[in-house]
Length: 76
Image (cartoon, rainbow, N blue to C red):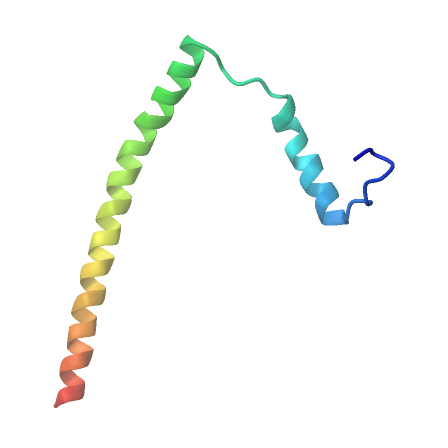
């Protein structure tokens, strides 16, 4: 398919292409730089993950407790 055969882009498609174009031009880090980038990302994600798991567990426990209360009141 050539550029002449292609359908014109919709405004949304043109916007997506414009937003993604810089990503296509960017070079991924190599060697030690890649290792450093991955390690840095993993370091900040670990504490965030722990906090989110704690919040999720608390919300699930509260939801379960409220559900039990609601079911208990209906049976009376």
